[in-house]
Length: 401
Ligand SMILES: [Zn+2]
Image (cartoon, rainbow, N blue to C red; front, side, top):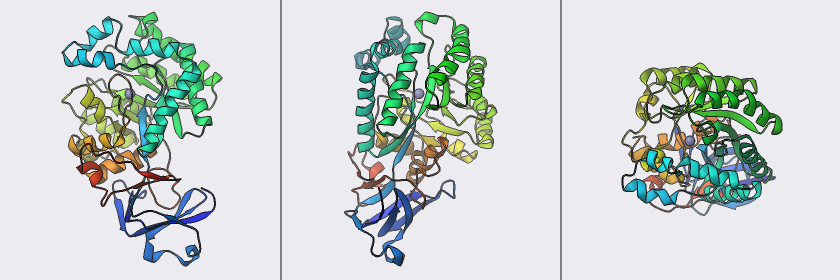
């Protein structure tokens, strides 16, 4: 938004305080002064400074103003879907069998390799529009369904095009998402190629596009040792680690993120206490993905409360992907954050705004204090708690850009 304006007629505003870890400010009968696409002032309408008295007004229509959600872990770009295996898995067919028959992630890799850049862009833009209409205004987005140099490079091209169209996103390179069939049984060889050849080549072809590098560290996928090799190569190229860590078993991924100065360690259903302490000390953001736990039918919810007590700034994300979290619904993430991870509403909101934004290095996103970037989400509710209280409630915010 250009120029100056004042957002008026708000029932209230609710925002994390960027000067604190978990404090949330609630202002009834609020107004927000905007200048050049940023919050210039916010507070009670009655306290609006006089210099804003003649600024054009935007009608808040009696809504609650909240910062936009930031989703710090998505696999935005892939082709095809995996609805075909949904019933089979419900009937108890193990994922390993689905995968052995050519389903699972291999099906997505096949479809993604066959997609053109144009097709990937259209798929990505439709998904971004859905997220935006639900109040998510910034995301992290990974490659990782190409698993070969040219296909990973096409995913990067598609992300560059989406950014060029004005979508607000940060890109993470994840060629080490799985072991492709060309390297079956040779995780070591694949990790070496990713570290020594593909990462440097992808950064050379798409300079400045990726900010992060990710590895799926898990038993049967990549080891801590292989992950370290890839992350060390990424760091030399200016890519900070984000790690798929401790999801299905403890592997020490959280500890590795702390050791390497990672931005985040994600999933963490089986994180150790030492891992939590290490993340708190090294300012690594634990990013918890409760819709994945839900969709996998697991009972091991990430120990969010313990992490907060250990001093971690916990964030929440969707893990949007076709296998274990086909979910573009931030309110479901928020509700599971409360109902299963046992966060208060204010904590879950902070985890999906302020801490999510900080894990991506954006101090001007995820809050409504002066300096914060628009857009702002206006939710048509009597009280923001309605957003989590009505399970399945289909709310959509109006967006003030
Ligand atoms: Zn993921």
